Image (tube, rainbow, N blue to C red; front, side, top):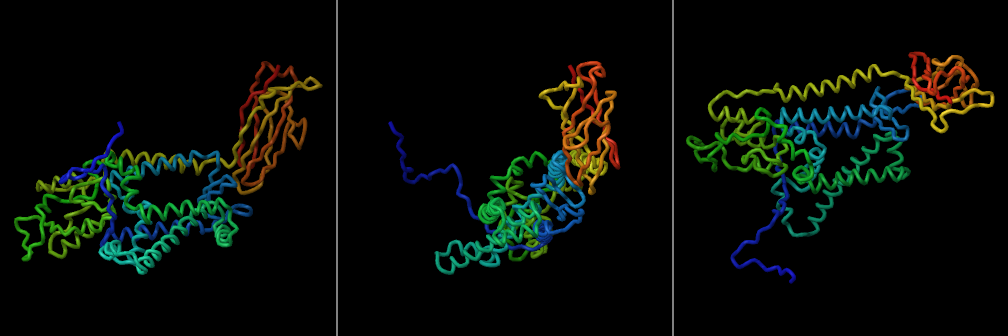
Length: 477
């Protein structure tokens, strides 16, 4: 039999598995944390859009951009630092430092990253600002949503979305500037001469910016971002998080006409903390997954406390240990130095130090050698045994260099290089600046010089600053 869907019985309430999402319209607020958010947004957006335009002189023929991921040249640049494909471990180190730094920030001050530094937060703040300037503050936007569709509503909606699209396009364009010369890229983009990949990147990055910051907003923080799901595992009782002093605020109620708060809580149930929250939560219900730690509820509540002449801090950045201490009449203490923070800080310091030492002391010449496998050796018509090697010299300096290559390990062995000298005991290898020189080298030896089937052989490369010894084998019959 097929299943039959019956309507709900009269007088009963239909239950749904999921609640309908309510659109959040944050109210304008001013205060310390709102100012910090404006500064963070300004600095981050300035970095994102202006950093690719910074010039850096690396000499003739080298990219003149300070921050650049040169995909064609397979190189990454950050001011005086140049990263080659062989040095991908630096990327691993950066990811480790970024991850542990995030854990450290969370252990110290909760989701301070989410509230002030996350790109989703930054662009959402900017998009909400556009809505506020075009439509109005919270009440005006709520009324606007319920207003019947008309010419005026369509015009304002179109204006908001047009400005959002312009911001999103700027976001996408700035992303592409990190992968090529910024000024050339800008010229090509606006003249229609950029590659399809460039326009595709702008559409993808800008499109996600438009959708996530314009329409998804808090849904990204609540449902899409994994960080909110495991953040509580990095908290402890001394982590500073957005907290509500229930022992002081309850029992809540409307403000008394005579402003006498004796025998009742300081919370006047004005809902200002809820109205300014970008994720729409009520912090009075305790710490929640959707709280991004932005502190706007603190600014809103402090303004209300000032209005009624009550002490600030009913909502504040505080730890659960301090809340319990204050509720019991004890002394609250901020403990930033704890085993958890010491471990995180030590890991960041260790990995960062290793990377810094490696960068400072890394050689400007490295060598890679690969023995040919098919065949391992060839016996020439004159009886000598010959082995082939692919020999690569990485010249990481800013000048062309001439290297001297010699052999050790087999007496009387000689070298041939394709396109150069033959039957020589010393080769001169020319390698251009900031490039890899690849040489096909054949080593020949008399059979009586070989004491076994595989004899140790050393290639010794002598350059202006260092000598590189490479160990390999010479195969014989």
